[in-house]
Image (cartoon, rainbow, N blue to C red; front, top):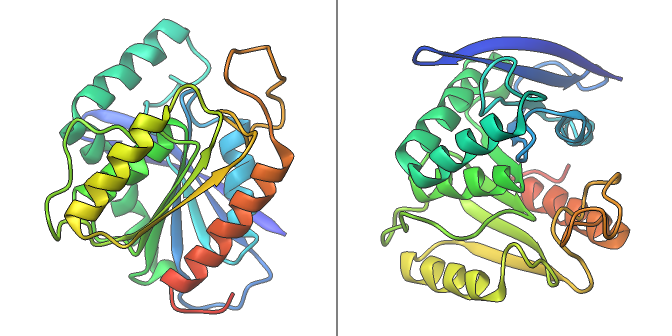
Length: 242
């Protein structure tokens, strides 16, 4: 069973509304923590489903809020403007994400072991946190954006990185994949990339129907394989065999 608890926190004057997911069957004591970062729609049902998925692995999961209280589900123009502002201002994006990490680190059950898993826009957040040198064990990007306004310098990336990418994703072209690989090699990062043939953008969204939104579709095999890869990757990063 997974317990959920809404959690208010803040980035400066901006009030944020996240949600904790914790399994009740796990033994008490310190557990590793995962911050799950939503996609472009904000903290929605997809993000909550994914947070529950990782909580079932035994982690304390914070589904964070990158937009602000009551923004998700609001006017799409407002949401796109916020996403664009954060994409174009990496310092602001990292500061907003660090507010969630700080909250997660204050939960005693997590100890000092934290990772970030992000989807779509959240993948960009996870990788940008890693580029900033944030004190996390791992960062996982699943059908996330790989392009960056600010690149990592040599030795700057402390986290292990996993990127799960759809080979037919028109929103993240192969040129971005190549540039990311070159950036991480130059930075000396510990990174790996999984590409899934036939998968487009948003391949973990079970309600994404082919053709409804160009370039976005659910892909069951890519969904299954990327979750298994992330599960095993986090276990190694945290030094356990969960």
